[in-house]
Image 1 (cartoon, rainbow, N blue to C red):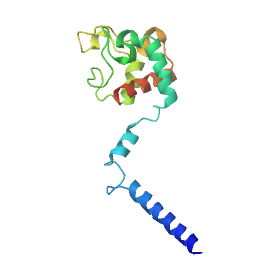
Image 2 (image 1 turned 90 degrees about the vertical axis):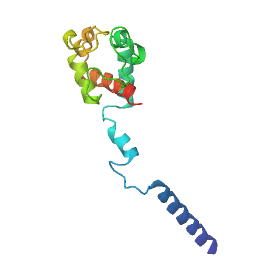
Image 3 (image 1 turned 120 degrees about the vertical axis):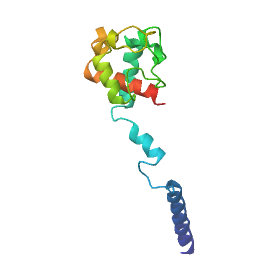
Length: 144
């Protein structure tokens, strides 16, 4: 009987220790860095979408200008999020919008990259799910 009671006390002690370690002194919410990171990841940025977007980007038209893995090229800038030329914040929704509508030559802000970006991937004519996948991939390039 005493052994069982001791095991219960140890189990309760371990549970209290684990719970205490999991909770910080700050309340979990918007001010918590862990929650901010988790909340910032858009719902469409899934492993499946990122994998499909990677394939579409790096085997399709995107890499021709933006370079393999989005490192930048002679036709278009890097997509690492250090400096957005056509976007304000680099949000997932902005990336979806710009892939959908493209960038006409008249709207290009960097004279060293003069190539216009075709709507829906230009000749690729990406579908809405493919655009979301490419946007998910590009979002991960700029949010690592």
